[in-house]
Image (cartoon, rainbow, N blue to C red; front, top):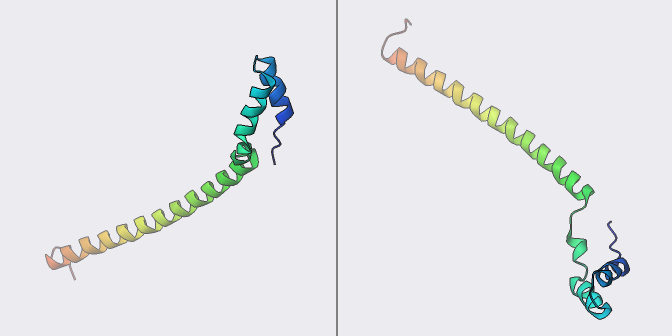
Length: 88
């Protein structure tokens, strides 16, 4: 979990020319929004999940493509037999 140093942020803002009251108000207004930020661990978990999802999708696509090729070959053979272009 990332920790946000509000005291340091106030010091940085006052050093940049903000009054202490304005710097504190700005940090208070930001509240705990830093908790909503993604950490490296969050991003790594998302990347792993995405990779797994893509592997699953690739497998399903390969299976579907194989089924389509098999069906198309069967259709071609059926048409050729119907037209009597293939010996029985």
